[in-house]
Length: 324
Ligand code: A2P
Image 1 (cartoon, protein in one colour):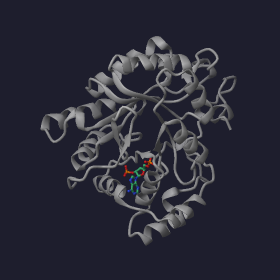
Image 2: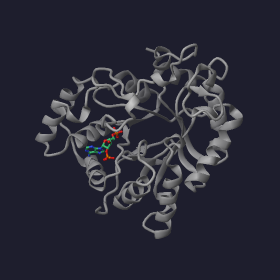
Image 3: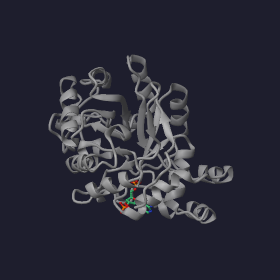
């Protein structure tokens, strides 16, 4: 992969910190390939890696990071690392140890950004729940309690910024009401089939940044989350037509569209050629007409509906998860 000399566009935080607007997603990057992808990405110019303990690959990412530091082509202060608090550690007493575990796995002393992964609480040690007995309701363990414990992590210097993921506007509002330190980021599924204009508007007005996950339509999502009727974003006729006009690929149009809406974007790839292609998309400019054409593709469609939290006798429903 060619080394990118240019500086990437960034998202600016209130304290002046800058998060590269394009990062590398690592969900579904398999052990055995993720480390290589991370090193390749950093070597080629990526400066932002998005992780989570639930992706099952942080150890290999940690290995790749420390090798990259040792080889000397990148230093810790030049990259942005995000990770997330898994749902089984929402109890305030578990929050700091969860972050410390992630730091030790990633072989880092601090994270740039730590996110509450879902507005869903699980019993300790539960990865994905099989029955309602493994859930904790938000009445029993409110998100505000978890948030207060996350605020302390910033004071302790274990992470620079805190935020959330998969939060609806009403849940963000509630958190903003009680927060001493506001959530600075909401990482959500965002692409032309799920454009979430009200979320963009709310976050813009309240100084909350957005990161788009599954920006390419998460084609390699697990099979239990796939159904025959799901639309394939990378094959959308409008996206392909725009790509042709720009002599770009559909993936590049999707990445560029997200950035042009002011959102950070974390396309996942483990392929050196596609890693480079995706990074180069940060330089593409879409016209107003392109943006209007893409705006018409919205169909409020989620590849990650959150149905895995909905269990017989449990307190979570898709309606109360998304507040719609
Ligand atoms: P691969 O890792 O083999 O490149 P998302 O970021 O929406 O979750 O999408 C990730 C999926 O898109 C993966 O299957 C990834 O495969 C694929 N992908 C990543 N970049 C590109 C690209 N430029 N063109 C086509 N597919 C891509």
